[in-house]
Length: 322
Image 1 (tube, rainbow, N blue to C red):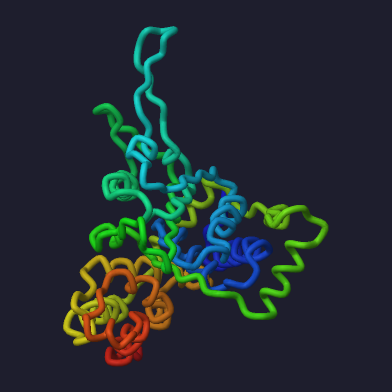
Image 2: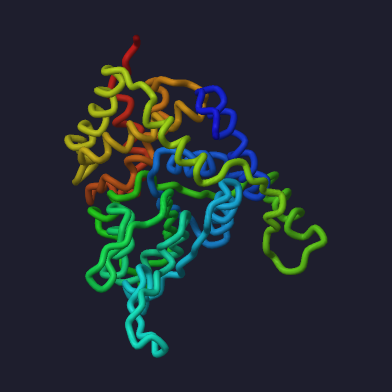
């Protein structure tokens, strides 16, 4: 049984972050953003060019959390039944049996989700939202916890099916994974080349910190974190400001406010506090909103980034002082 006092949970979460960091050199911000997503009971969309360790990040978290890991490589010919499962005829019994798909796991890596057609994408996103799937007219609950880490490559658009805004909204966070610094890359390359064949990372340095049952307790602890009314309104005002900002053609909907508040509770718990501060909202605003807004054509022509505009919006909303 996990000690769910705030200080103890915060220490446990930092040990998870450090354990994942043993394999994922650098990328501390990405690690913490994925951890916040998991604590908040959400799903994350990981975006970055190939070779930055998105698959490694997912595998490292599954080991540190000691939960079942599954992976689906999304391709143009992937069918919804390849995700959820299907009925197959058993010649021995003379009847149909249900063969469950890879979605029946705890942490699922949906690799290059934008390479599958919309119908297949929708089958995964429905499972993420409903926590169940329907196979041959029968509903099957998915085992908790369910965490989906989906990846997409930002530099290749040929042969892809971009996620619609309504489906992007299902992800709590959109996590940007950037290039490592020179020192981090130097350490990373030495670690890969150290007495190893090939270029795969050794996950033996990742230690198991908690299990699935304890993770569910952590998620419950995050749900109990206090949010003052002024802080609550602060998040709502930030999301509302994006709707009238001239640089956005579409602003964030109410799910953006909800996402910020859910993530802020997880961030507070990660920092060992039982209450949310305005700085928690500021710290998670970008990954919570960057996929819920759409730039205006003028901003796209001027190559202004979504994050730059969101930071401008944040500066115009006064944070609570008490």
